[in-house]
Image (cartoon, rainbow, N blue to C red; front, side, top):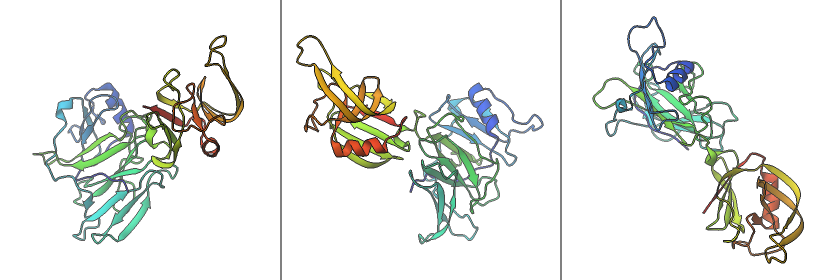
Length: 335
């Protein structure tokens, strides 16, 4: 299970207004007819490390661009529990983990399940971060949820039974293009009676690569490939990467093509000992125009650096990897 902490908070506001104020960095009122400051927010820059909003019962917001205004929270205020049904007992709220169908679960103090309800589209399998707070000021906590790393950062506010609350459809704190997810927490800043919601990117690079539906990591120092689904390792095995003279490139790549057959042949010069002609080779994943993850039937030295820059894999593993991989799948190579 994946969850974050929370305390208390007030109502929210329109996603369009958030996006406009976020990128403009100007103080702006959402409603010209609203004269009182019902909400305020702070953010450093696009894709901030953290941002907060102070909110009011009508859901209007004023965005302030001074990072110094971000409040500190007293120790012990955040909580993953809240009395959602008014019975005097605090329930515990958790969000589903990566790879699971998105949902929120509510438990009694004794650990028994009260209810479990869906959250977001069923195809969003990047996890759900959850917080608890009194969003509308009625004295009863609501549930604030955010999408996990790898998904478009999307925040929703629900009542204790999973029904949507204002604003309808939630909001996108870092814009609709940011795919780093969002963590959420709700609480009262030190010395203040007003509640705020604190958000931060779950993955600061905005790519969410480590929690993509499918993802491959190759560690050159270990000579090991790891395959992941939504952040969970599903298979790992030894490989052979490039030698010191012909190193495998490091960095973030993706599968450009799945090529059924490649002829590996290269000439470095007349009579060069590095020249090679390996013939037709099946099961090839292209990650650069000249670099592949591929079957290597000509050796059995997996776990050692023996290639000319490609990533060599044995028969059983390459057949699995080739069938499992998808074009566009992220591939990261580290040392």
